[in-house]
Length: 323
Ligand SMILES: Nc1ncnc2c1ncn2[C@@H]1O[C@H](COP(=O)(O)OP(=O)(O)O)[C@@H](O)[C@H]1O
Ligand SMILES: [Mg+2]
Image (tube, rainbow, N blue to C red; front, side, top):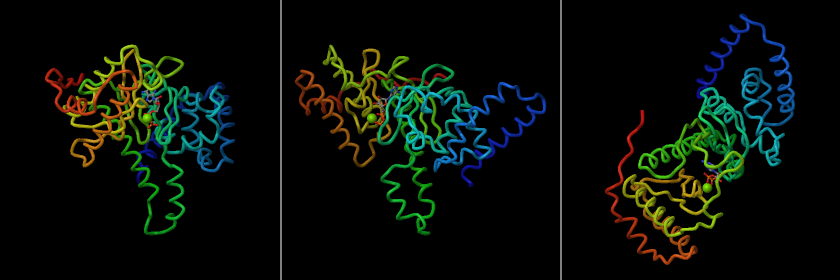
């Protein structure tokens, strides 16, 4: 229990307030109707293993509150893959609690539609107080882990392993948030990090109202030389100024947004002192050189490496915090 105390506290605070509110005015008929409507969905979850908890009173109320905000991903939208299985896999109890928190804070009002699903995370289009946001929800259990768990669970020597796995995921997500912040401070083109709670990361959305911007691998750019220069400088600033290396730099993790490349997926980025940072740097530069050569440029790896390490960046300065 201990670790969710703050959550329970949050709920009981809310419960008290709700009771007070109710004393003051009766729930309107509309509200009553809405509650009944949503409980149909929750009732249907009763039978589903893993989501039965939603029928518990306090969670039920929480879920009812955010259900409308989640309607885009509840399975009746145009995205057929968001079926019950996906819902169960992505929106487990603690994830819904994180969304609840983020919704209460105003960072997210609604989750509108899914953008991408990966092995480690699903990305959704959301809307918050300030407009559209991208919401990256990391899976907290994966098949591999589940497979391991059956051997470990019940063995007293490994108590709390599940929780430790979750903690690891949470740390990973915070790392992606921090990496984004650090890169952004150096003026690099990354989505602006907006917030993070446990396994949910909220950031600037890159795209229009119906679809995310394409990835660099999916577009044919008009001026590859200019894009190459820009990405080379990205790698140079990341290394020389932010003292980091992306670690998974590739046309899959670069979006083409507003006629410019924007780099995403920085969870694995490491600082220079990491034992593998140089190896990662060479790999990142190699990927860029491969992309350049595929796009008609003639670039040597050694030349690109030299540029990343030695490029004059005296014009690049830390961006002051606005607040
Ligand atoms: N800020 C964003 N705005 C719009 N779409 C995004 C954003 N971040 C990620 N995506 C979409 O989600 C996909 C997966 O995101 P990514 O961060 O690369 O996660 P993964 O770890 O699963 O590779 C991307 O290829 C892109 O299509
Ligand atoms: Mg990726």
